[in-house]
Image (cartoon, rainbow, N blue to C red; front, side):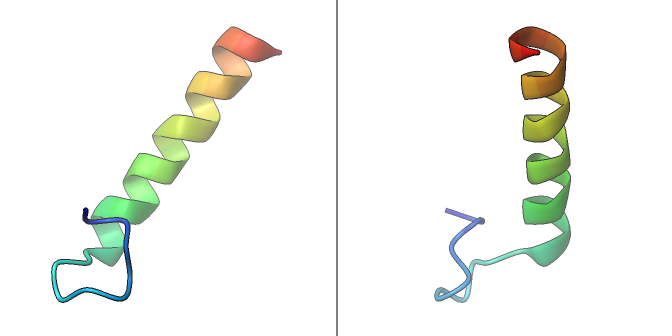
Amino acid sequence: GFHNDSTPRYDKSAADLAWQRTLKWFDKYLS
């Protein structure tokens, strides 16, 4: 997937955005 930085498909901006969304989701639903 785009989050695997060992492949040419890696997209840093998309991975960073997805990680930010993941952290926000955790903060919203698990805190």
